[in-house]
Image 1: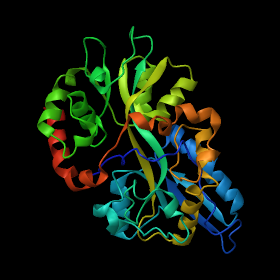
Image 2: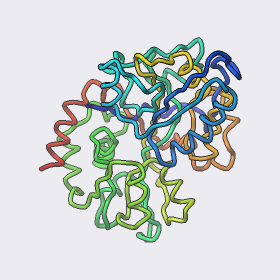
Image 3: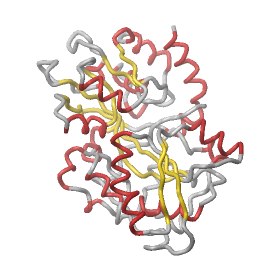
Length: 348
């Protein structure tokens, strides 16, 4: 199953967010409904539970939410194709829910969900997904490893000035190709189409120092354990280990800003309740709650003044002037070819 990539550009002026109340009103009424919500697990899904899912159930006693993790795109597609859909709302990366996935998804009901508040010009929603968080692919580093901190993607590739192993996401669309090109001198606004020959040549310079990870928890743990001196991760995962005392900092001088999205698998047995949950999460009244538990900023433009003030300095939206964006549509159209080459390179 192909996945595509993280999200779009930085240019949205918000510091964080919260999300507006639509979605059927408190209490809802009617017969009891059980929704299955699937996400990425770990600190992120724990934060979603505290910020959104538990309060939603309290306000809507006719709906019970059960959870699964981690999200698996292949499983979602298989459910739809078999006609046995057991998931109702799924949190996906910006690599899912674009044109090549629309046949597997229910349309988002923008009469319930506040789609126009979620900056659709900046996030390619396609009508089948809406963003629920803004986050960044970041470089984090051990503060006890270097005399001077890294300040660029070029430093990530500089093993002489910044020695040690590198934590690298084993996913073609995870951002490492973009990091390699920028480190090699490609201007961020000229990244796409990706020059794969140049990117892989740059990656060759650190390949034998890469510690490959597949999950966000792994990306943070190898830094916390000192297995790597520098690694790519997601900013919320780094924040989590910082709170546990790990001597790790985020390099905000360059980062790739992106989003997660909510989708509804086609054929869900609970479409109305699923739309209500998404409306709750993305509303200006509720989604800022997430920043109390993890440093991700929802994209609702009406939620800026509801962000937890203690988290503002840890949110990627505070550093938009140094942010770089993915081109989701390009990845949707080119993923298969790029990923084939990635797999050949990894196994070589």
